[in-house]
Every structure is written in structure tokens, then in C-alpha cells.
Length: 130
Image (cartoon, rainbow, N blue to C red; front, side):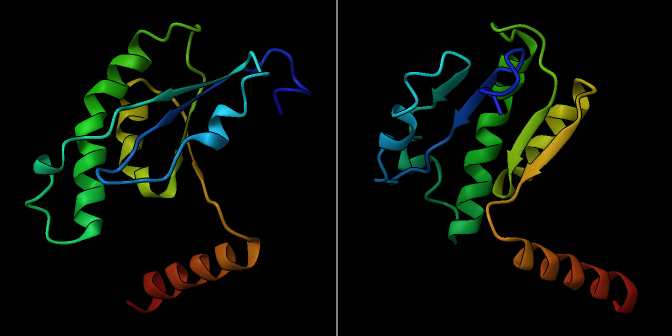
């Protein structure tokens, strides 16, 4: 998209889970793009999330820990005004930050259309049938 529209820039905030050994080789490969920026947050100390009983709770704790940092980044965006927040499906609580700044929030869903469709169908069944 940034190749087609020269007025668009994107800053990707990369939050690593404690103990996550996956490297950043992929994001580092974008060095030739001047309008795609990556901000890599350092991993949190494991002791800050040891109280979390499951991986899901650990992810929530990490996301909530980063909310104030991201709030400050949005408030003082060095590349100009922020037009929207696009969040991963695991970071949907970041939409609270978007609401604070009256920004639209979009969810980036890394899956195929069939899986997204079945997820919407399940939600409709839950809403209509309980």
C-alpha cells in the first residue's frame, strides 16, 4: 500500500512476549522502505507475568503493560498526526487507546476469508441463540 500511495506512512509497534525466541529478521528486511517504520519494544521481564496461570492471561498482561507506552506514542507521534490504529486480533484492548484519541481502530486478522467467515457465523449464532 505504501508503494501505491506516497502520502501513507505506517509505524508498526512490535511487542514481544517474555521468553519469545522468535527473531525480528522479517521486520528487519524492510530497511529499504522509508515509510514503513518498526518500533520494537524490549521483552518484559518474566517475573512480571509469572503470576499469570495461562498463556492467554500472560498475553493480556503484556498488552496492558504496554498500553500507557502506546498511549504516549500516539499522543506525541513523531511522524505527524495518527490517522488510525490497526491492531492485531490479540491486541484488541488497544482499541481503548484509539477511543481516547477519537481515532478509528481496525483489526488486522491474519487468516483466510473462510476462517473469518466462520468466526462471524459463530458470533452471530452466539448473539441470536445465546
